[in-house]
Amino acid sequence: MSHIEASNMKDRIFQFMKQQGMSQKQFANELCVAEATLSSIFTGRTRPSNALVAAIHERFPEVSISWLMFGEGDMYAGETVKESPLPSTPSPSQGDLFAPSSSQPSIPEAAPVPSNGASPQPILRETIKFIDKPQRKITEIRVFFDDGTYETFSAN
Image (cartoon, rainbow, N blue to C red; front, side, top):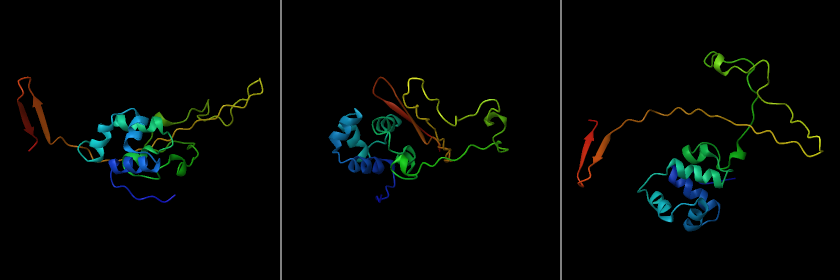
């Protein structure tokens, strides 16, 4: 599936909304957020919050969180998810903390068939991706007082 490369999260959210064929009002209703919230994000006044990303993923679980937040991979999670076998021995950087238990496999090979003849439950797999990002630095802190004044502290 071809799509335009969106450079930041607000653009990717907008792109996803259009991909779904929704107006801003419809999208806000689907996510149970105020239309003004989306408007301020799309105009660049505010940044998308983690709560908005969670609302999008809850309503549209097929969207890739990595793509939505960081622009990595494809828009839909199913397009690039590939299972890889678990390592039989941990790498030196992982240590014993992540070593699979020898007494019990970490992923069952097949789900047991229920005695009533129903189909077996699907096996769910979770992929964890570690992302190296530069550490953020505080550049300014503003303290607002109850008398309507404020003070600004800069990290310079």
